[in-house]
Amino acid sequence: MDDFPVKLAGFLEDIAGRIRALTVDRAAKVIRLSTLGVVAASFAFMAVVFLSLTVYQALEIPLQAWGAYAVLTGLFVVAGALIWMKRSKDPDR
Image 1 (cartoon, rainbow, N blue to C red):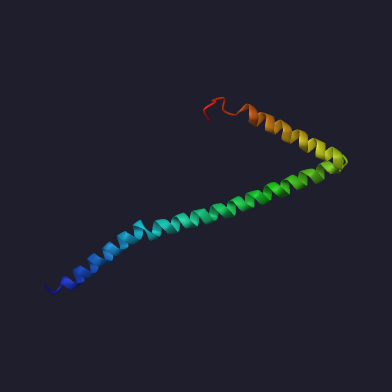
Image 2 (image 1 turned 120 degrees about the vertical axis):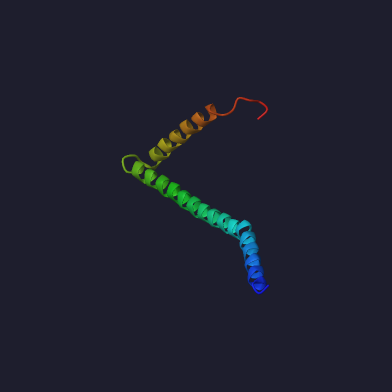
């Protein structure tokens, strides 16, 4: 009977550890991953913006501004047409 308080304290600590593993640790992992996802998406968006500006500036050197716009517009139209051809033909979707 002398070790009952030690066993009870160990039992309660074990239960608290399990509850924490099921709740707080999982929530912390989800929050960490979502935060990293937002940061990665922000960096990816900035990279796309800077890449598009760089491509425009590079096209503007040999062509004038209207030529660079025409080339980029043509590329976007071709990309849009390819994506449009890949769409689902199912009328229910």
